[in-house]
Length: 234
Ligand SMILES: Nc1ncnc2c1ncn2[C@@H]1O[C@H](COP(=O)(O)OP(=O)(O)OP(=O)(O)O)[C@@H](O)[C@H]1O
Image 1: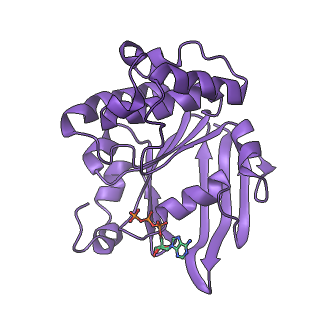
Image 2: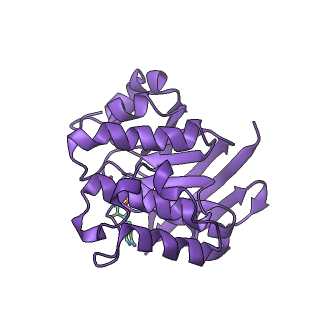
């Protein structure tokens, strides 16, 4: 399995504070890696570095072996890096179909079946403002697919704010993008029960450093991980 994403000694400091320190992680083609860690561990900061929103202070980010550490976000998107954010980013007064059409135009990719693949076709004519949180998440995924930036998906807490009854369907959509379409996924998620059925490996961040990487079962049984989560549910 070739590595799609390779992080080497990746570090990020702000105003003299080290937020991420010396992170080494290789993600294989088609792999699903969950990123967990207590609040403030640096999970979103890691995604910001990979997607190019912030620049690394030290270390290297490579995609398919090419160094992209200093590359602009839009060039990373062209390499297939697609990212979602903790809070939904949709335009309330545009319909679902208009969102996907816009994403397809930006990316010059085919709009085709993006809505079908995220199971949102029946809401094509709805205004984004009228969607449930779960459907907004699906729309964001459809936009990534339509834009062509979905070979390496960075999903930042996609279940946040989603009604518990809608979680299984969203998990099924994400699983299908990974298993059926072979997309590589890096996903921040707090709920281990969600990750157990999805992730090949779990990477644990703690105080900006990578504490452990392993299968979900091994990570749940890891005493160092349990210690890092003292006072928080794992
Ligand atoms: N632009 C910034 N300037 C200063 N400090 C920052 C900045 N961005 C993040 N931080 C700090 O870096 C640390 C890591 O933040 P980050 O959002 O990456 O954590 P997280 O693991 O995603 O947390 P959560 O689970 O709460 O979303 C926090 O202490 C945060 O306050």
